[in-house]
Every structure is written in C-alpha cells, then in structure tokens.
Image (cartoon, rainbow, N blue to C red; front, side, top):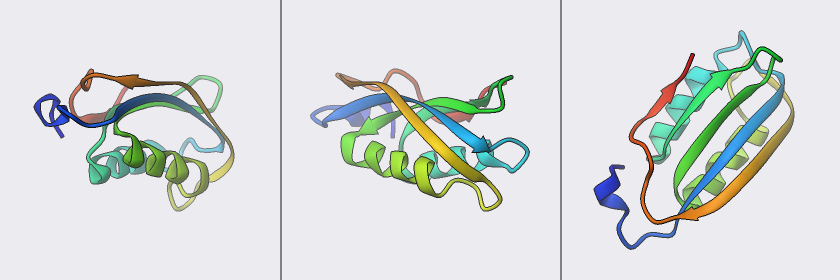
Length: 103
C-alpha cells in the first residue's frame, strides 16, 4: 500500500509493545512479513528491555487483524505473554511507506 492508495479509507495508526520470549526467535522478521502480507506500513524493533516495539498503519480492519496476530501468533518459536497497544488514532494518510525492521 502506498500513500496514494489511502484516499477515502478509514486509516488508523497504532503503537505496539509485545512482551514474553520475543527476542532471538525471528519475531521482527515475521512481524515485518505479516505487515507486508496485510498491506500495512510500519516498523518493528527490539528493545533493551527484552520486548519488541513498533507501529502499524493502514485500513482499520487490517490493523485489527495485525493486532490479533501480534497478540496471539507471532513467530513460530515465540511465547507472547502480553501485548500492549497504545496511541491508536485515525489518520488522513499513511505517514510512512513499507514495513521495516529498525535497529
């Protein structure tokens, strides 16, 4: 999805933090792939505290699907204990492009 594709859609942005055994299990790579599969834009990165944080933007139903995936599925070897979603807001247009891993 590009910024030009977003006209007339109910777009949202949400920040996330995922807790549990989510580092060293390819969680970022799978999150990036899932975001791209859903056509979302955003980013994901590890924290020094052992969590994974990021942001996802796109049509509201697809962002909701990503939130479920982040809460319940993740990468095959992860163990998610909690998912926190904050700053969910409506946006007029996508504020970034692609879905990437940040370092």
